[in-house]
Image (tube, rainbow, N blue to C red):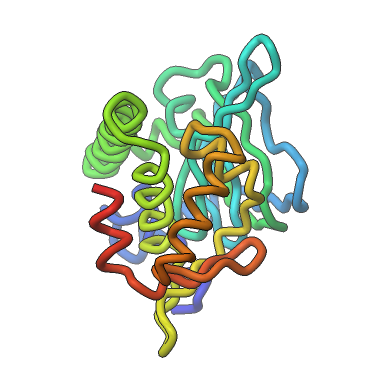
Amino acid sequence: MTPEEDVVRRAPLFTALDEASAVSLRTSMDSVKITKGNILFAEGDEGDHLYVILEGKLKLGTSSSDGRENLLSILGPGEMFGELSLFDPGPRTSTATAVTDAKLLSLGHDKLIPWLRQNPDVALHLLARLSQRLRRTNEAVGDLVFSDVPGRVAKALIDLGERFGKTTDEGLVVNHDLTQEELAQLVGASRETVNKALADFAGRNWLKLDGRSVLITDLERLTKRGK
């Protein structure tokens, strides 16, 4: 199995399929490439495709009427998004923007529905994915109400580390590719407050900052701060 095939098989859409079915479904999907900073689809656009990320990272966000932005999530290889449109085709609820150059697979509503009828386990996996997404949304709302900004920053870094981190002798290297403004949008706070929290963590030797990445040197303490 090639690295790309391994990434595809990690997506919830494929985990319930045997090898032959996975290959068949893969061949029915279209390849999409998008360069850093470009928008794949915008909030309010009509949509009936889901996407699986093969390479790179994308962010999902929303904007308020006064132009303020809220970053909902950062997604990377093996992760899937846009699945709501398969069950309920209609306006997109968020904007998908490439954080880095990215390569994706797309699958339309018309192609997936026959698969769901023939492979009910796939539908169960997609429903589980939607349930996880709703649970994370509820947790995020709870964090905004009950957690302070440093706690939310710590929790966000731990989550990014679990998905994008690489363990080294020095600690956990997390190449999140986010600007400080985007990180602030992700935790629902101002950039100044988030920078202050990061500086405090660095002063405690819990992490080291390096552009759009971070080296977590004390995972245990940072994890406790994020609870």
